Length: 177
Length: 177
Image 1: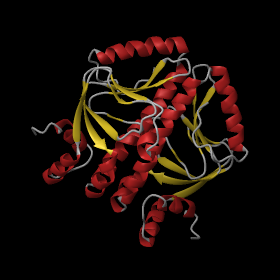
Image 2: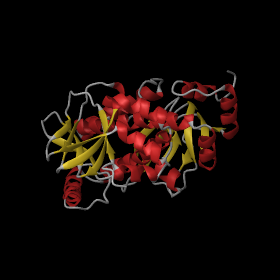
Image 3: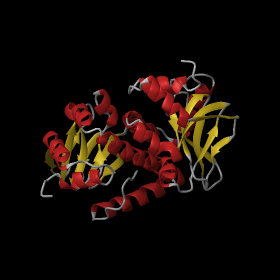
Image 4: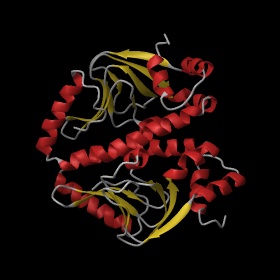
């Protein structure tokens, strides 16, 4: 596959089958975007317009707390989807930021085409359902991890994990710092 | 509808359409269970065998930390699904407990029939995908809520919310204490 969307198509193929015609159809609905380091795909107050699949690089979702400090909630690494589902689903202003940690290339699955794509390719309902179950499982472990650490230890460990992630350790999928 | 599964069928109907024949088929795969207050559906070390839909009552997912204290992660109130997806999907021992907060009646959607049901009623892929997106959105807000509070304030507020929940306030869907 020489498509620029090949990593996404390979990821989908792990979970559901698309025929070559269906894969071609899907690609007509997708777009790509390259984001420079520290550039934002979403900022607080904006309405989220897409779900983002990371082809290369790394995204992070963070919030700015009452003291003005950034607090990272999630990372999206290669082969992961990241979005603000509350803002995306309800088309309401986001309370979060999504930023590129390094130069990052993403596939945009835009809200405006989502229902049309899912209608034409209902296998993708299963694909996203399975991925969201994995996310739900990971969310419980993030909270367990958070509860298991004092605040200071959590910061030290997660900072170390974050550095490992950015220097090429791609096996750590969901972190909370 | 006089079926004991009527609340679940009505919940499904909010998101996807099942014909009467399909609804009848679904019910042949489901079972119900009543759990007394403080009784467990799942304990740490057990493999989770089902996804639970709360018909009446309230469930909670909690963990026991290194100091032996229980820490509640999620509540499942009427019309909500609750499970340990990591244990359910991978059939590995759970690291969590699922307990009835009060006398609770649940529908069991068992792992052993899941794939067969989803194959016969693929609309349910969409149903669960939509619900899991809502859960993913709620998870971000839980973390935001947690970050926004000092430990003491979080405990006080969440205890108050917990009491409100148990005394009949069913509008609070996901809490983290």
